[in-house]
Amino acid sequence: MVRRTSDWRDELGRWLKPFLDRLGHKARRQMCPLYVSGLIGPGDRKSIQPMAKRLALGECDQLHHFIAAGVWDAAPVETELLIQADRLVGGDDAVLVIDDTAIPKKGTHSVGVGAQYASALGKTANCQTLVSLTLARGEVPVMLGLRLFLPESWTSNQARLKRAGVPTEYRTGIPRHLKVYPADVRMIWPIAKRGRPRKRHVPDILSIPAEDMLANAKWRTISWRTGTKGKLKARFAAVRVRVADGPPQRIRDKGQQHLPGDEAWLIGEHRMSGEKKYYLANLPAKTDLRTLAATIKARWICEQAHQQLKEELGLDHFEGRSWQGLHRHALMTMIAYAFLQYRRLKTARREKKNQRAAAATDIARRAPGHPRTHRSTTAAAMPALQKMDLQRKAA
Image 1 (cartoon, rainbow, N blue to C red):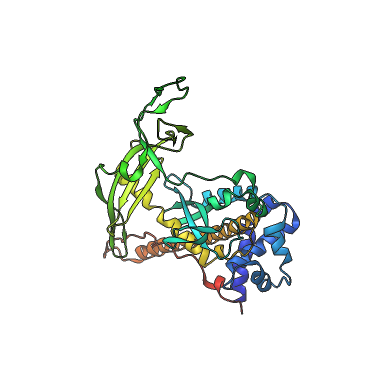
Image 2 (cartoon, rainbow, N blue to C red):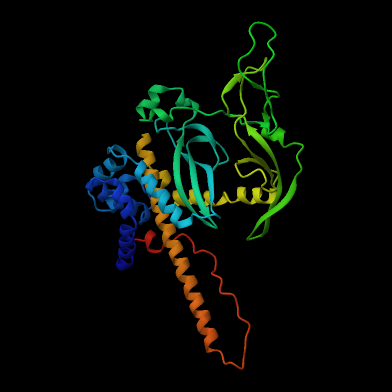
């Protein structure tokens, strides 16, 4: 067991080299592999203090400084993560998924915490919400980015933002309700009933909720893949729209309205359970409904990644309160996850190579007078995210 544990730690050190080159300072290059191996290795709790104890570092000051207090720029390390992710799962058939995941949290002082809708729980709860960016190909996701969403209870309180160390560029909110315009909306000069004429174009119709926009659309039942219980299917509809996310403008007596933004696909999904979901996609205007549905359903893989980041790598175990500490911890969990996916893909390639070699040997051994139909040597499904000795204590 000691040797097997040593093997993956040695491999991790080699794989991390391009990340460490971007960290610069010797102390940071030492702490990064320790932190990542602490996330991957044994132990139920992946916060700083228990990891420092398991890594035999004595006090946790060094790890804490690296994550929460040290002065270093995470951007070069994030860039390297993009490069490595593209090498692992990039390509023409890859998808980029934007989603969110909630981290339940007690208290009021941790950055971004508040009563808000937690998608993972399906209800409003006291939590932090992280917006995620995931690159995936087939059934292999690699997380590229995690950024904390700040609810209005934070963005409206500058003192609170300052105490948590939120950078100035992130101290903004977003519209609460998404509205859209038809793709053929026209911008016209408004007619002023009195006074000076308006100097800014306005849309010739008002924006409406996404659900209303799809109310009269043509719905079709589409199956996107086969699951353990048969074909997965739902009813879908799609229309081209312009998202109401442009600059705000007063329109007649309706007050401030967001002007039409970029054109996109608005897609609705009516599930067999009765649940209704709505999505936006920036795929080309000629994309057919089946492709739109399949692309949307590809996002399920990021939900798997969220779960594994929490259950296996301690994404939700960070106990600090600062913006910087939370995002650095999240970055380390994404790097750890990318390493495990690297090992997963390498194992799959090795198994596929062995299957082909075995099939070739079997064919060569057959007697010429007894031909037999050649069976496909297509590789089996991808192996699960590796745990093995990573989650067991070394002897």
